[in-house]
Structure formats: structure tokens, C-alpha cells
Image 1: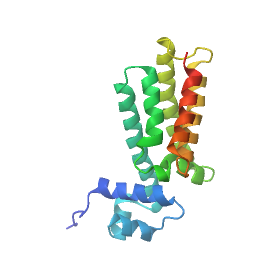
Image 2 (image 1 turned 180 degrees about the vertical axis):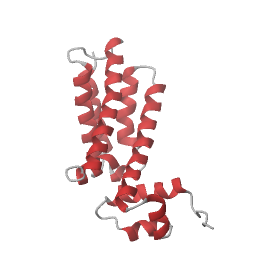
Image 3 (image 1 turned 120 degrees about the horizontal axis):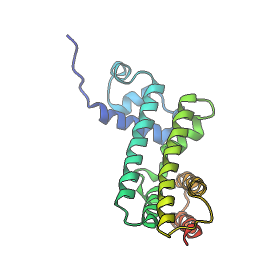
Image 4 (image 1 turned 60 degrees about the vertical axis):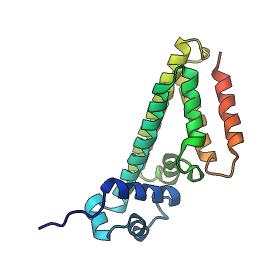
Length: 192
């Protein structure tokens, strides 16, 4: 008779995500994962597969958490300007571990050039974020909040690039005040 699991899968996956987020893929060993997750090595392999599969599941978990939070915040916004401010402020203040930067950006920089699975995921995740921003741009242009000098897709590409830069800079000792200035200047450039 098979033994039942002595751990909650979502809880230990969250622990793995946080360790990968803090240390990166290459630096994190299976021993680190076993110790940090608090489960036996065999249970880790039986439940999550190998290190690479566990890492990809961790990336997916992070993306789901961040995407859900951003979509919910945008949905609650009364104006497109408020929705865009929410996104920028979330990137600067809202991450659970701002000193670690963005797990997706970190993982993309570390692995995407040589890991087709991470490259595919990051491309898809970035496209989804860009679409969210594009929808905000369309909303703002229709309501007369944002410039129509550029189409919504071009503005979304620009603002997404700014957001990735902010997430990368958040990993440094850069002050939040500086990050906010950059975000607010970007907002000023698109307001009518």
C-alpha cells in the first residue's frame, strides 16, 4: 500500500519557488531544495520530477500569482490612468521580495538564451503582460486619457520595456524614489 504524502504540494512548491527566486536556477542544488522544502529527495522526484521540471513549475506558479494580482488590480481601477499607475506601483512596491527582483526577469536573463523551455515561457509571459498593458492603452485612448500620437501596441511595447527595466533595477540598491520617478515620467509621456 502506497504511503500518503506528508506535505501539502502547493506549500512546498511555493518554498521551491522562493529558493529559486532568491538563488537562481544554477546556484540552487537538489540538496538545497530538499532542505528548504522540508521533504525527502524521493518525494521531491516522485511529486515534481527533476530539478528542471520543478523550476519550470515554480516559474509557472510565480507567473500565476503576479498575473492574477495585476489583472485583479486593473479590473478594480476606475480609469486607465489608475490601472497603469497600479501596474507601475505593483512592480516597485508590490512584489513579495523586491530585493530579489522579478523572478521571471531574473530567470529569463539567466537561462532563456540556452534553455528553450524558459525562453518559451518568458516570451509567452512577457506577451501576456504586454497585452494587459495594451488593453489599458486602448482603454485610455478611447477615454481621452492617453495620447493617440502612437498606437496602443507601440505604447504597450514601450511601457512593458520600462516595466522590465524597473523590475531589474529593483534588484539593486536603487532607491524606490528613483524607480517612482522613472515610472511617473513614463506615465507623463503618454498622458494627454
